[in-house]
Amino acid sequence: MKRTYGMTCKNQRCANYKKPLEGKSCSLCKQALNAAEVTKLQKEIAFSEPYVTKYQAPCVLVELNEPLQKALQITVNKCKQEIMTNNGGETPELYQSLWSSTAEMAALHSIQHQIVKAVPLVVLSSSLDVDELAIQKESRNIGYFFDTCEGGNGAAEAIFSDFTKFTAASYALAAECDCEAGCPRCLHSTACPQHNEPLHKDVGLFLLDAISQAKLNSQNPS
Ligand SMILES: [Zn+2]
Ligand SMILES: [Zn+2]
Ligand SMILES: [Zn+2]
Image (cartoon, rainbow, N blue to C red; front, side):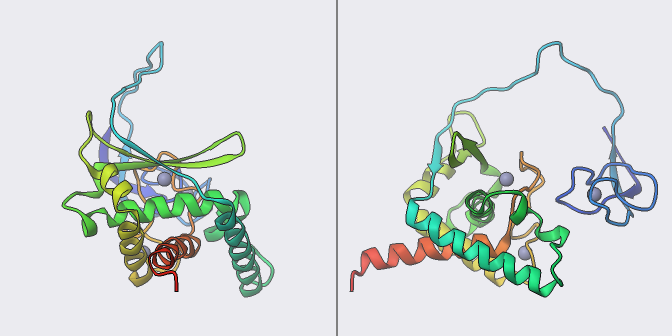
């Protein structure tokens, strides 16, 4: 690859992000092109078998229980209605993922991103020490956190043992971020294997809050 300067799509959620492009708008997300640093492919070598790297590291699995799934569905439906009302019945590109995926997947994936962003606020570790992946297995939505190096570095383990500390810190980080729909500081990540889809800042905030509240209630039954 070579880094140069040229016209590209500056939408971080778009697969054309940082790719050299021609014309006036992006063929994928339709946003206007801008001059910026672009990554140009110099040479490509195809492997006869897919090249895979494997390593072992601790991994945390996150799933939502039924009451939480139901509460989420209600919130997401409300959210969608509000968006439609505010946009004259249209569904803007920015919020498309709420229509193209399930409420649970959008929420789960969003909190995973928000939690990864908050890692340095909770432990002496960086957001690069842990990665996330949200997948659908049969009818289950499953989120994984895993350390990014062989043998592990303790980041996923910290998320497991202090989960509500992480949800509270990521709630504060995202809620206090002045962006409208999520930005690279609080939500989007260029390392996301799912190209930042689906993600929704407010739906993530709702779930982070619900998890933190549930913990408070269980500690203090009154
Ligand atoms: Zn684009
Ligand atoms: Zn933000
Ligand atoms: Zn992701």
